[in-house]
Structure formats: C-alpha cells, structure tokens
Image (cartoon, rainbow, N blue to C red):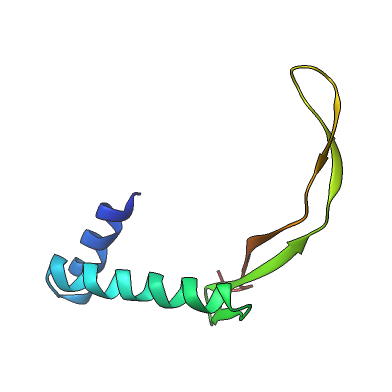
Length: 85
C-alpha cells in the first residue's frame, strides 16, 4: 500500500474527503517527524511505538572489493509492535 492508497482507505473508513484525509495524514507525519527528531518516543496503544536509537560505529566490508571499511555511528528509526498488534 502506498501513500495515495492509504489516504483513500483512511478517507473511506473515517467518512471524510480524500483532501481532508490527506491533510490529516500530512499533519500526523510532520508532528511525528518533529517529535522523533527531538528524541521523543511515540506510543500508540494497540499499534506500537516509534523511537530513535543510536547505532554505534562498526567495521564492515565493501562487497565489491572485500576491503574493510568503517561504518560511522548514526541514529535510526525503530518500531516495536504492541503485543495486541
């Protein structure tokens, strides 16, 4: 399911127009992005939790050359589904 199909499904389920559903979806996406960038956790009861996690620097291998490379540390988005999901 892509974004357009998701918005259409939301509009149908909520009994609203696709334009209103798109506005709601975009607002939710923007708020979630802002909160996660600030290091906060988003918990949706019955669905799951979104949070940022630090991935430490590590060593890896270039698959083409087999040469050892250093992969830098970075923050990654994680999702943990709830038990009821």
